[in-house]
Every structure is written in C-alpha cells, then in structure tokens.
Image (tube, rainbow, N blue to C red; front, side, top):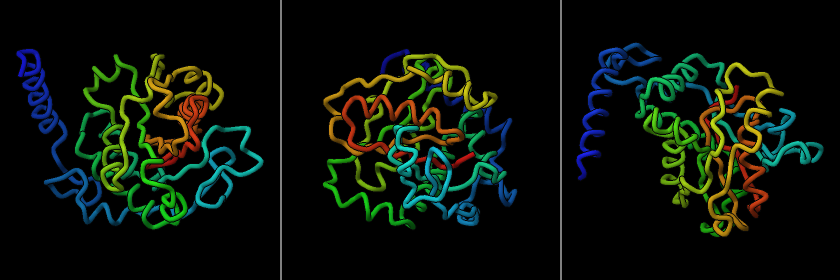
Length: 247
C-alpha cells in the first residue's frame, strides 16, 4: 500500500472516530444505542405501496411513465421505497449523505430491495436475460466525491446489484458539471441546474441495455431525468429510476 493511501486510511479512521464522538450510534427510531437504525426498527418503516408516473405523479402500472408523459421525461419508470416525509427516513438520509455515516447505506438499500421484491416489478422486467441489465448510480462531481470520500448512490447501487446478481457500472455515467445542491431550488431551477451535467463514458456498454439508475432521493425527478436522457441518447433501451425515497 502506498504512503498516500496509508495516510488517507488513517485520516478516514480518525474521521470515523470523531463522527462516533459527535454523532453517537443511537437508533433514530427506538433511541437505543448500538446502531443508527436497528434491523427490527428498519422493518417498522412503512413502504409506500403505490406506483406513480415519474412525470405527473399519477398512479401507474409498476411505476411506468404514462403515455401522456412520455415526451416529458426520459425515464421509463420510477420505483421508490418510501416517503421522504417520514422523519426517520429523512434524518437517516441526511446522516448518510452529509454526516458521512456510510453504514446507513446498507440499511436504506434494504428498503428499496424490499419494495422491489414485494412488487411485480421484478417479474415483469427480469424476464429478459440477466446480461440485459446494468445498475448505474447517479455520479458525484469529482471535487464533491473527494470532499465526501464516497458516493452515497454508489453504495446503494452496490447493494442492489449484489442482491439481484446484476452488473454494476459505477464509472459509466460521469458528472461533468459542478452543480449546487438541488435542495433549495424550485422545479424550474432544478432543471436548469442539472442541464448537460452528465456524460456517458462508454456508449458501447449502454447500447440495448435496461438500466436501473440509482439515487437516494427524488423530488421533481430533474436529476434522474437528465441522467436518463444522456443514457437514452447513448442507446439504452430502458432507464428506470430506483430511489430509497420520494419527496
């Protein structure tokens, strides 16, 4: 291991130690120590059983984009596990993303995996050969990735890929624009903020594939849609947005 990597490993250990001091491991649900979200408490978080069109928000079959909205979005459909309005979920995602609590990623991914397994989404889409699918996380801009030390969407994507035996392509989609956070922007501002923000590294890999595009939260769908647009232009057959929560 190089001196630089050893140094970075020590820094990460120190950061994790300090995080444990500042944010002690107390369950967000039951307030008992030991974990930020105990497995039994995770099971108590309600899944959203509905499926809605990613463009208009109306109920749709398996979350597919409805016929009248197909020109409004590049997403084939959207699957999300629960509501971001759930205080436990919103707090867990904030800790995961902004306070660098990486181990929450595995817990949050379990909610999305459960939603997929409980729905007919798996049956209807996995009738294709397994090599027809790719799991692709929404990327971070390089500077932001270096600051955070990890991409939260990639952690979720790894769990999804491992659970269903699918190919993960973490470096296929690249973020080429350093965009401000979408959090305080309205719908129009969000669309402009992420416009032309993504690029496909290898179009040959994308051609003819069904892509599961992974992110932690979707609100207006601007980020997922912009990424899906680039993937579709590069030859993807379908692009499904898969997120833990919907705002």
